[in-house]
Image 1 (cartoon, protein in one colour):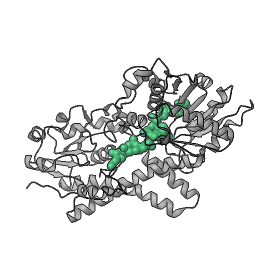
Image 2 (cartoon, helix red, strand yellow):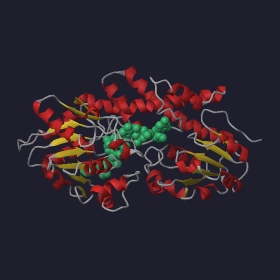
Image 3 (cartoon, protein in one colour):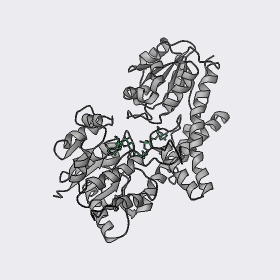
Length: 457
Ligand code: NAD
Ligand code: UGA
């Protein structure tokens, strides 16, 4: 029995989910998850959880009320803790120096000060949020500025889960990375964190490193993943110009074991709260060390992503005779990927805004994310029709744009849909998930990424 109390500050996509898995796997730890957002905590305590993630509810139910508690009183959760994971948001700064690139660390720093204020003994503080390299130094400085002579150790343990597969990613991770400085006390603190993961993660997958490598590895892992997507997306216009097929290229390239087949699916652009933010952060850090070439290299990953989003929209506009005004367009998907309700940086938001600017009538459907539409579009949400049912969204539409790769969109009865659409009917598949030949036979003009178009006369 460890008898230890772990507190997590921040009950979002990472904190809320990671702690549910830790609590489920480690019944000998008491796990407290706290957040300033009272509404969110309220929902963590019901079966209508604040986020949708396959398998999450079952995991929460295993431990909630036993050794897992979602609480609003941040101060007492800090006070009770032996180990504090900090998993607050670290968005891109929108003001002042570094606006649009560097990380806004205000939420992060606030937690450091809260920890200091509410602690009456030393603690281990774990960076779970994704942070610029060297943040641990700032955290330690703030924590050690105390007059109570309390000793804190700061450990880096970045999270690599992907939304939609978070539970599986946490239960069987490729690796768990734990960075620390090399003093005797820091190494002992690191081993405390290792002991938590050892409850279910094989020891060869628990990797320890120096603290700066750990912080930076997280940014680099995301940058590499995003780079693969931009690499394959950058080839889609070349395929369209030459008659090559991007699926055949992904397969041929990915079968090289040195390259590997994952993250080579072309798309209407990557979304999500982190790829863009983390690459911008990497670019900013490189620039601050005067590493212009490295900064430009990574910035191009983002430029290709913007180009791909714009290209998809322009393909729709040009194909539909350069006018969308008054036409109904059914947009299939609002979340940034399948199996999540998260809409942050979703390519769907970009597309819908472009369609609205063309005065199109937008009918948006999504199996899980519609409740976030107001958050995603602000006042524009009122101009969009929202449908749970994709068949309804497509009724009388001139075109369908598939933006999220939800399984359900592969299985729809497109013959039925075609019968109720305006003619000529177009489908733009921004995920290459539909059977173009079949749809073409039904009567659609069909456009995928990096493939020859299948046009009806
Ligand atoms: P999120 O916005 O879903 O959750 C952050 C939570 O922190 C919010 O609920 C917010 O209310 C809370 N918070 C902010 N300041 C607080 C304070 N002072 N006290 C208590 N609570 C506070 O964010 P997220 O998606 O969980 O991301 C958190 C961090 O994890 C980010 O650094 C992100 O880059 C990183 N990350 C995210 C993912 C992902 O898939 N979302 C994966 C890996 C890493
Ligand atoms: C990503 C990383 O995969 C996680 O390891 C990391 O922890 C997380 O960011 C983070 O730091 O937040 P996530 O954004 O949740 O996870 O989801 P991904 O599966 O990486 O997808 C990101 C975007 O890329 C989605 O829009 C997805 O549709 C797109 N994508 C993914 C493609 O366009 N093509 C692909 O082949 C794969």
